[in-house]
Image (tube, rainbow, N blue to C red; front, side, top):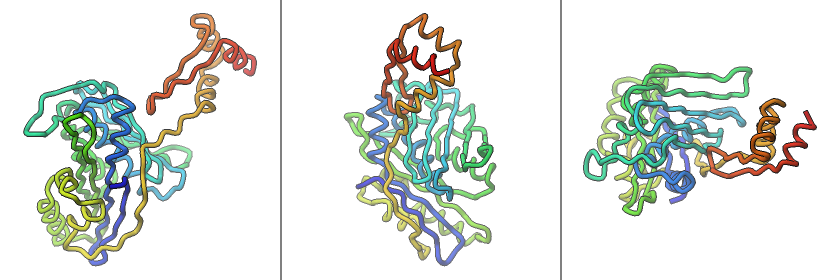
Length: 292
């Protein structure tokens, strides 16, 4: 099942939806950051939410950043997605391990913490990015995304996100959806959505049972006539490069670069998103200083 996002519009009601399957994306994040299961689930859910929200942007070079800061042991999660839905991210404490809160149910809420905030940053290539912050509702991610849309964008939203981790700690399946009401939606549309959500149940169980992204959205919105707007592949994608890291070094300024040379005689910078290490020799740092 290839990772993809499908966006649909109901022909017979003011309802739109995005659905994602992202097993490979979340597994790549797990491998890069060596996350334990509860951190894998928390980071995976955040990546998928960012991916769907990025994919909704109309700006070709836009991006969406999600920052979740709770009082739990994970310490915080960051995920960034481009306007195609490709995402990257990290969790502060990837080695957090907590007891299950039920059969095969990871306790993401306790790992994230319920006292904290979710911040959404939308860079739409304007002078200033749009920033919205809401308090965490549960730390389970999906409920917090729902709260964000209700409070910051006034869009009634149903969000489901799930990551199923196998016994060897690899990702077995991952997916989710965003269902949103457009102006004019009535109680009948809301009831139909609620029935579909209840009928399908947990996302991971539906995916494990064989549904792909298209099947998932068709099942949840089975009472609607759907028009497919787009179906696009997505992946875990980092945009770091030596050129970007070099610009970051230069932005430190002369004093900090001189201190780095004096104290270490070299530099090793690690990308937070993909763990790639960039090495700079004494001579390369001296050349950067000379260019300032």
